[in-house]
Amino acid sequence: MFRGLLADKQYKKFLFGGFNGVAGRLAAKYGCGWSEEDDQVVDKINEYGPDILFVALGRFKQEIWIANNLGRLKVKLVMGVGSAFDEVAGEGVWRRPVPGWVSKAGLKWLWRVMGEPKHLVRAWRAFPVFPLKVFGWYESRG
Image (cartoon, rainbow, N blue to C red):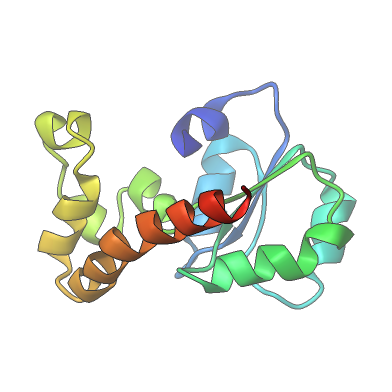
């Protein structure tokens, strides 16, 4: 989804986060605004006036940042995209091409865990926990 929205010319986009200049390289390629720095970034985003803001600060940090700043942002859509900047740029573990069958089967997460085993603990914790939390939230709504 991120790749498709990034390439879509009808939306003005802003990239926030990433590491080692990846946001800047993607912004140059796709004609977006960007920043890796957190200082005054909300003002910079609002001044640029994007329709879509993509945030890639890493797990939990990006969700917390979005929650803390959503009320101040003048954008139509904010999306936390994790490591998608690296994937689209072909950097990091994503330098190795993902076989088509892996992608079609929805197993990119497994490919990433195999390439970076440090993600195994996080993936294993998320697999049983997330569905249980969603179910608990759904049940609590009555």
